[in-house]
Length: 469
Ligand code: 6PG
Image 1 (cartoon, protein in one colour):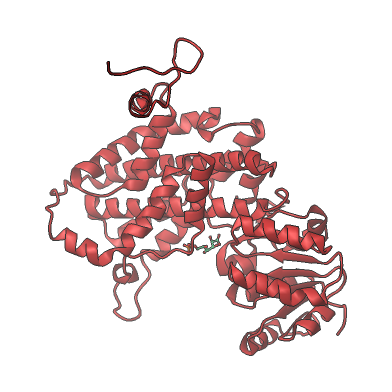
Image 2 (spheres, helix red, strand yellow; image 1 turned 30 degrees about the vertical axis):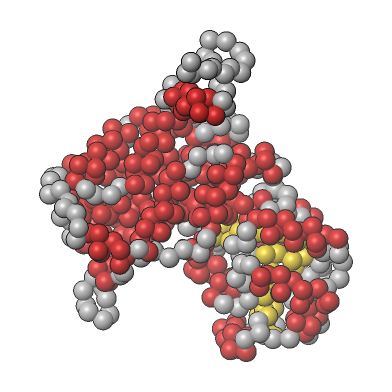
């Protein structure tokens, strides 16, 4: 079995196994590799025909089985494991072979690996893969960046296995170096933001309208037929009515309210800070996962403070308010993430095409949403659009929904219901659309205590004042 398989994949966990089966479904032959005998056997069993899908534990046999140039994708946990796997592969590779890191690697690690491997004549690229296990099997959104020549060899396979939006594959070469991993990182930051927002809407429907899980299921389901149509709204509607096998009640009511994280949302926030790009809807989503982790302290603090009595809102009114506020804050969250991408593109030389990114997010990925078709059009019309909020087609969408966002945020504040994602989105909007902010006071303070100087509205130059005689 030498030099026959079109595609190799290292890491036969759930994602890896599903991805390789997807490759085989699309007419390519694929060879898997994992140190775990059980995983190797599981793939052979599931693959059915070893001429089409096979797997081995031995790295040398794995490399020998692949046709030239070898196309090897890694779906292993981000971090040190990626370096270990690369080192284990290297003695068995030839110049011109291609390694694709399909995990959520930190983008600077991808830059380091690409530089290291290109010296050895190996093409390396990071490709974000979104869509979870089902996506990997049925069609994920794939975000490759790095070696363009390397990508050309893999392009037919990726285009075949990716999700399709109206027949168009949800994969595109995004840019040099770590562009693929960077775009996937920001995708996940937006994902954190949208997830936080949907959880807040659930909270307010439940507390302000006393909606049952069943009623909320119908609300989210009906939204999914409209402009809020998105994977996250769709799965929320399903989650709300899933029965618990242990209690026969609704599973959602038994799930501990501590959200875990693997770090991609935090990296998005951290890097946005480094770039000086505000993404408060993403920042607060990360902070809320951190606050959620403080369950024991929250329980203690809850007993120490009174909470206002919640005033209920009539269901019809509440449904309209929440739908509009959610639509508004979804837009504002995408706007922030895309703004970060545009800035990172300049800073890191990625030369990103934002319309192309929005396009490949329209299907397959976790943040897929009807809105992304409109976002694609907005950036196709004006590729240099600095912020989605400046797009003519979005101005109307925002104007039609911002009042509900205001009403809901003030309702949350008055009634002691935390709506931080919604309020950060609203605050971002209000600040971004203010021609004059009170930061002149901060400049005065900085100059007062530290002679940090300030600029003036009425003339050019740098000024310093002796504030006290
Ligand atoms: C995707 C997801 C995927 C993963 C997240 C979960 O696009 O398919 O983003 O990459 O599910 O990384 O992240 P947390 O564990 O940090 O929530």
